[in-house]
Length: 225
Image 1 (cartoon, rainbow, N blue to C red):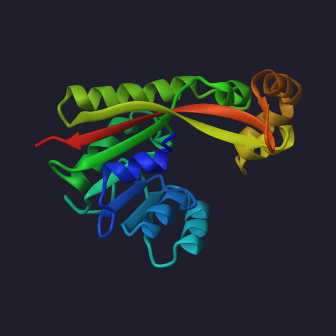
Image 2 (cartoon, helix red, strand yellow; image 1 turned 120 degrees about the vertical axis):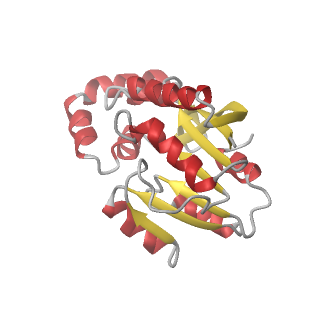
């Protein structure tokens, strides 16, 4: 079964020498993975703490603090750009602006890949009392649809895959979904019994623990022009 990384790598193949941008790079996992496959990867994130971890993980990479709505690179600086589970985290109406910026720094005929979690699946249903992202995930889909309708980008491929995660127990699941986020940590404490019930209802027993599935929409876009 293909993973999001497989589809991203396929979209930009061959990777050696490709100039790619990870928008919302977090701690640098995707930057590291694509760099290992030969790409020249830059990243941007609004969190200084995340960038500290990313710089330690991928020394020498061009990793910058900033907002997706105002990318600090010139037109056509990259062969492609990626939003991996990050578009829905762009505040409010900035999602469409972030997509336009990704199109700008790549340029006509080049690719932008958007990977977004859907508001469904056992992982989502088990975590929604910690944070229900139904609305913002819908906003991200609407922003993408608007940019397609405006002719900024065209959809080349649109598919859904499952991200399968195995956790040892409820505590491991809560550690995974809160990950140092104070608001999520507070919600997890306040609704622990309900979250525990949801976890028991949704998780499947598997080898090594409990298995949860998060459907991901992977959209490969081509910049117009």
